[in-house]
Image (cartoon, rainbow, N blue to C red):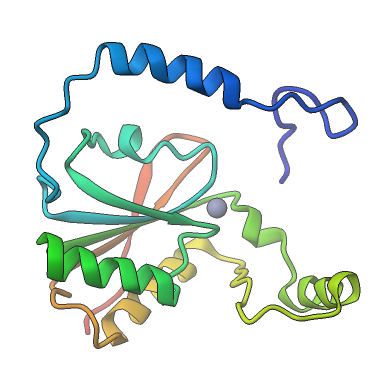
Length: 181
Ligand SMILES: [Zn+2]
């Protein structure tokens, strides 16, 4: 990543967070008011986004708790497991729309797929069954992801698939024109 992360650097001793998270949760649970939320997402919406720590999906899109399924992985890649979740989301829990959110300055843009796999094999003796799915252009990567969704037989609803690139520099999302089916 091109930015210096806040907090201690890699050479400083690491302080685990779990105790602080538990304390935060006690405060959260004390004012909890969402016990009556329905299991079905209120907006009938599923979002697939990168796991990037700077991308606060709910804040960026104005989503409230209970309104959407939010699926995240490195890159917001449409993997078999994401399709599994979307299939369940649509068939079991009534979602009809998919929104993809990739972003600028993604960690995957600096990964060389071949070198990464070779290094893993050197370090561990095996190559992974999965691919890293690195990319150069986040806009083209969104188009590729939309194409993958359109090709899978496992989705009931493909009429409303939209893709965006979140600009970590401005906080804005830019819609990606993926063309027609
Ligand atoms: Zn990313």
